Amino acid sequence: MATAVGGLRGRCFPRAWLCRCEPVPSLSPTGSRGGDAPGTPVLAPCCRGAGCGRHYRAALCTELKQPLAIEELAPRPVRPRQVRVDVHFCGVNFADILVCLGQYQERPHLPFTPGMEFSGTVLETGKDVSTVKEGDGVIGVSDFNSMAEEYIADQKALWKIPEKVILREAACLPVSYGTAIMALEHRACTQPGETVLVTAAAGATGLAVIDVATNVLQAKVIAAAGSEEKCKLAMQRGAQSSVNYSQGSLKEAVKKLLGNGGVDVVIDTVGGHVFLEALRSLAWEGRIVVVGFSGGTIASVPANLLLLKNISAMGVYWGRYRDQNFPVFSRSLSSALQYCQQGRIQPHIGAVFKLEEVDRFFAGQPTELWCAREKFGHRWKIRPWEVGGRDWGDAATSQGLWKPRTAGSH
Image 1: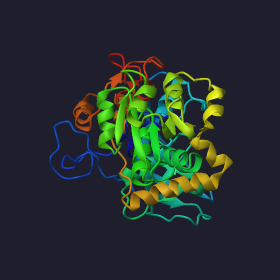
Image 2: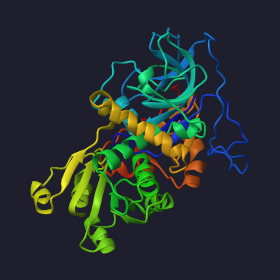
Image 3: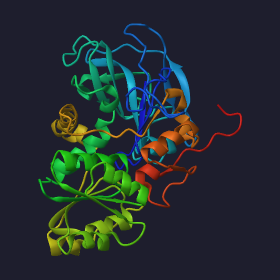
């Protein structure tokens, strides 16, 4: 199984993955052969088959603010409309970290398994399932619980992966790209040639926004982030220009780039003063979409600015669409798969973990990943139990949340 580290509903970590099988030394993190640097994480094929009846492993949060435990669980039978999936990759998002701290808006009962997005192959289907069959590659979304070798999903929570899309990339799509597509297309109605300003641009959501805005919608993107390293990554991923908002006013930097016109669309995952600066950077009839508050501060909207420029301020809580407007929710995922199949988007994967190594990321001890982080332009600072402070939304160099293990702990 595999899992990814990335930004989310305001998710703001770069992507990484957990692979449950033994690594294949000849594969690079991108799946290509040869040229691997020592210590570079790699992917490995899954080895579980349908109907094996074996117990499966899962990452369990048994106590908040403590390392996850990897435990074996007994499989349960599938119901008529359910599907058993052999999970190959599972995304690790900012929300996964928050929920394990007890600081997310949804608080599952202990013990629980994190993991909100995954890709894998169908092992078994209930008697009333008509959308997928055994052996199909699928992506899925869950109310957590998917950071495991096996997951049982309702058939409505699965989307079949097209032939040209590989499982590793497919697992990057649901949360980050679903959010990006929902924000840019459904809410902001972004048009070709418009200028999009995205904050926390080096995070998983920010990079997805850059990808979709630039390569699908043919918009111009200004990437805003908190360091030159992050700005460089955003530019490499397709942004036309960048702004380092740790070095001065975001509004003034945008003005230098565009003059008095301003940007047409803002996608903000940071909140606080960054949100207010971005709001003041909008053009006449501009649209600002609130995706999250990873900076730790929720700003108050000055309504006079909305009036004077006829600005629209709106929100995107992508996961709620599953309950409130499922067709729109489903369309965002179908679009992401279609864009990936067409080669119009290319998800960014930061690093790869095996399932049993998940705490090396969460606990702030990912020693094997430093080489990969340098290779991908990431240099993460991991500080135990700090929420807020500097801009959490800066993704690729965000501070981590997981408490380092004490000596002798497992």
